[in-house]
Image (cartoon, rainbow, N blue to C red):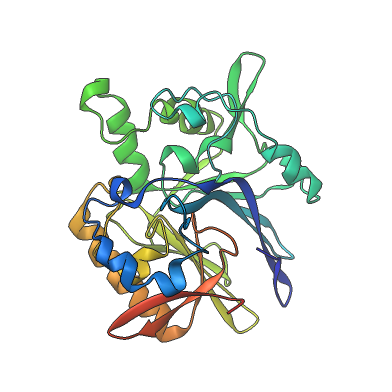
Length: 296
């Protein structure tokens, strides 16, 4: 994604990893191959690999720069984290932090870190391993967590491993708790307002406290949708939940409502896992919607 400039605000996408990911029948319990065929004119080859049929996806962070602050939205998987349930993420070593610095942003320059939810692939760079302990990566930042989301995963982390919800491994212990102990976590409500430009929008279902972000600048409305949708096929098939949704029915309700809002208001959409070019719009097609990349 190219840098998006909206008056005195810019948005960039910092990719940690991208490429062929899940087979759709694994990610979506309600998968129907006929739906892929129906929408292949815009899904292939940009969003689904033609040869393997695997979904093309990305794990990335959005960087919002305003004259007043720098805000990071979601912090990917991170380095050196023990993630045995996902071998590709286990003890990974990647250049995400160096790439952030190459964009002219040092860790101490970051003012806000917003996690749309507290799944393992959205919190990893919250912390780094230093002198034998996990410490906040961004020493001057306020980390904004939806209170409901934090309380759910805090309770979940205290359960026996076999009783826990989701495949979050130990990410609460190594990526959330150190931030809280450092006094940098701020628990907020689902309608939290950062400033006149940027605010939270509650979108529960994927997780209990999942939020989207709305950024308004330069006459544009940008929606950071987190995991409300994992892949553009869900724009056309909003009844498809991912296998990682905690409350499937509520996730569907949130997705339908948000898609209609994005289409009606012609919002620019930035999702957490859409492959490059990432930026696009929800546009009407037939009796539903499709995702239109901004270069179309």
